[in-house]
Image (cartoon, rainbow, N blue to C red; front, side, top):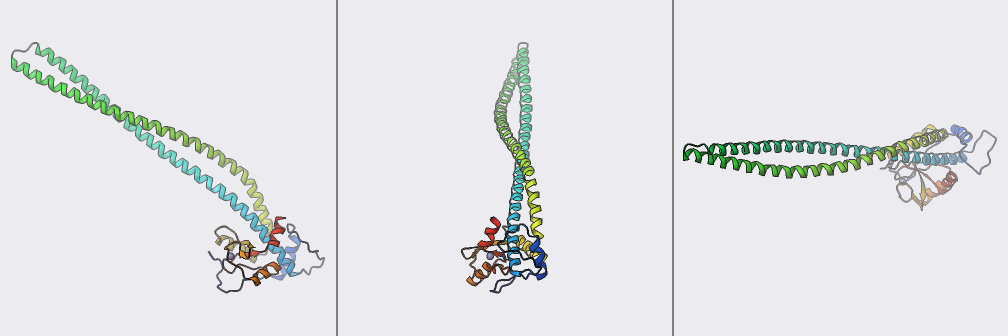
Length: 290
Ligand SMILES: [Zn+2]
């Protein structure tokens, strides 16, 4: 992540056209300065650079706030989407279980019919045994009764098995429905939260975007383009960073003492030689945070 394409050891001052400084000076109401404003149109370039640095740092602060709002708003819809996907999955699972339950119930009914049929055949054969003409007929009916009795037992065994499966399926449905209810409650809460956050942050965001636009007017196009390019390339969206304990606040690489001195003089716009971010010192930060 090094937006700076140059490999030179020297920092890269961004040149500021002289003709642009006057308007920046006049318009930059948000910028505080201890300097006495001179009535002449001849502005001192060094004051102008300082004000640009202040405007840049202020712009960075505003844009960072906008980024934070957008991140919060971006994550919640994903959470809602995940929950909704889970709900769809659980609903399908419950539906599948219900289909299986219906199938088991149908099979149980079929087996119950089979039991009844076997029972009625058994009683029919027993009835017939009372009217047989010989032993052979009697034995034949006995075998039939025995067979139907086995058929009936087998059907009853199956019914028992189906009922046991049915019970576990019904338990699974109950469990899935409980989870489903929880998830549904979760998604309802998250959706309400999202709605609140969107409403809350939209106003805040709009006012910040306006502030950002206002600040941008004080920075000439070339510098603004550089700022936007650095911001886009930086993972954390930081294009303007403070020098902290002699290191770049963006990439934490050490800044040579002579560059630190230049940064503290506010006479040039200095970028980090490693990451290309615009560097400001504590003095600029204090003015912005005041
Ligand atoms: Zn850096």
